[in-house]
Amino acid sequence: MKKSIFATVLATVLAVTLAACSASGAKQIVLRAATGETDTFTLGQRANVVGELDVSDSKLSEFDVVIEELAPGGSWVQFRKLVAHKESTSIGFALIKNLAGDYQYRAIISGKEYGPFTSAPLTIHYETKSK
Image (cartoon, rainbow, N blue to C red; front, side, top):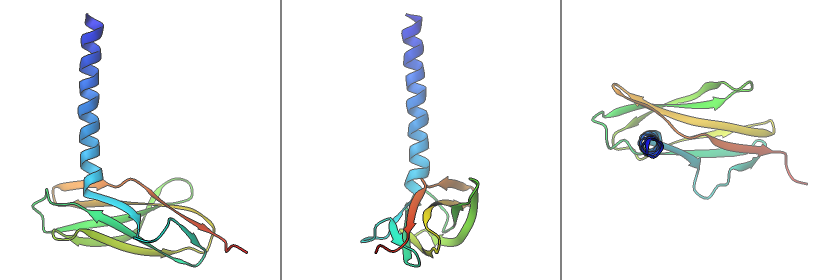
């Protein structure tokens, strides 16, 4: 009996925790390659990235959006900083790389007493030209 009550309580706590985590970060900003583009590019080619926003649950009119890149060694560093407005449904940025490899980006949206909310990482792959 005790084991079944414990399992039920644990499952409930886990479900509530997962729901809270997924509802917070995922709904505010989601990064993806721009429409019509893949996530693989040739060296020197421009990659366009879009961040879809949902800040409808905030009373703020303006938000900071920090785009971070995963640096060699595994730490996130600021790549760009943008400002979004309450009416905004997306932000965008572009990048061009000259070294082959996988580049990861994430976005953090915040404002006074709002967030920060962090997107899932997006991987952009750069490769040498095909022959």
